[in-house]
Image (cartoon, rainbow, N blue to C red; front, side, top):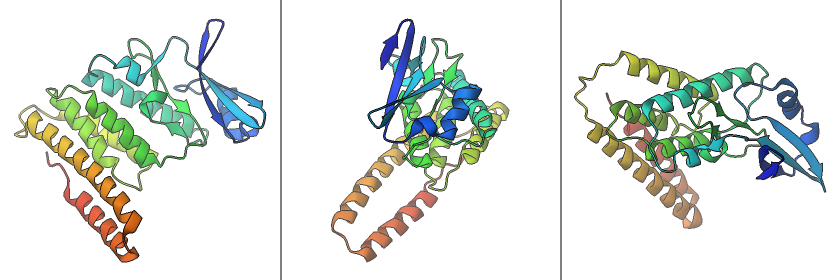
Length: 239
């Protein structure tokens, strides 16, 4: 981070030739709505991307001492969809979805995303990180928040996840939440229990996968992968 006069910046350093990158040039020249303004500096063979974050704080700071409400989560997701639509007009991809790169105003009226074309984390993993963050910060007594966060978490388990699928899922979930009545027989306690179980299962699966990779034969690795795929297909929540 740095401060220049009355402006604050979040900086990311990269070995890429960012100054000549047409994707960043399009973002700089067009000031795309929903994204942090960025400037590129080149020095000693490295590029520094400076994102202006004046009067904003990142999502973990914003939710440091409280829970995110359903309306705030809806605002976050709708503004994400809007940002995706805007950047899609320029055929650009590279939104950082890790919570520390999402910046918000005090009232959450303005949400700004970080465009970074050198993103190395697969999309489904970055969405999974965001979903787990939201799950950690929702009110477990709020059924709508639980269902929305859990639905997105389920989608993040798909390795072939795409931005269009995420946007479609968000819109479908919000539509269902609007039309759904409160007479469902599935309680918030059941949903939260299912969420915690699936997160635990995912962590155990990742741990087992690492152990398998270190000493197992190729055949055992393939069996493990097949088991994980089958397990993901079985673990589904039914409204």
